Amino acid sequence: MTKNDTMPTKNFSHFDQAGQARMVDVSHKDDTVRQAVAGGAIHMSPECFKLLTTSSIAKGDVLGVARLAGIMAAKKTGELIPLTHPLPITKADIDFSLNAEKCSVEITATVGITGKTGVEMEALTAVSIAALTIYDMCKAVDKGMMIDSIGLLSKSGGKSGTYVRNDRK
Image 1: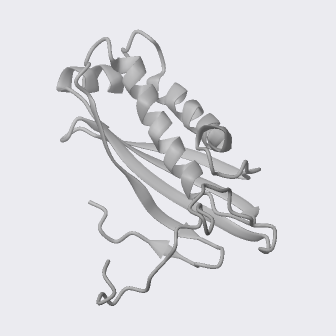
Image 2 (image 1 turned 30 degrees about the vertical axis):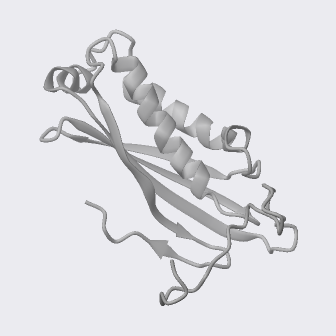
């Protein structure tokens, strides 16, 4: 952005005045109910999709394991992403939608907390790890699977209020 753009200038909160990385101090913030929803997809071959949807993948219950992996990842985000806060999340749900036309699994993670900071990173991490788990469990059948479209769909709570992504396909 240049000074002539109409968007207000925003600073990255994870850097101090000298440009050094820091964890943002949220101690002054009030606890509020917060929720974030993230989504993504993994695309696979028709053969792999058929095996997945008929529970015929040799490693077992792919979506059950991916759901558990996503929930565990949401809980561990503070250990995985350097400047995120370790959070006592109160909700972590992973949902899957099978798209036969695209041979894909669409993944949605919903994470909640009552706290001083949001759970966007937890929801995004949950989707990412759920998708990677599906890949891991199905790679013997299809190494060409593609993971894409991971992004924040909505968030609520906190000072910045509600955000809803309106370009979801």
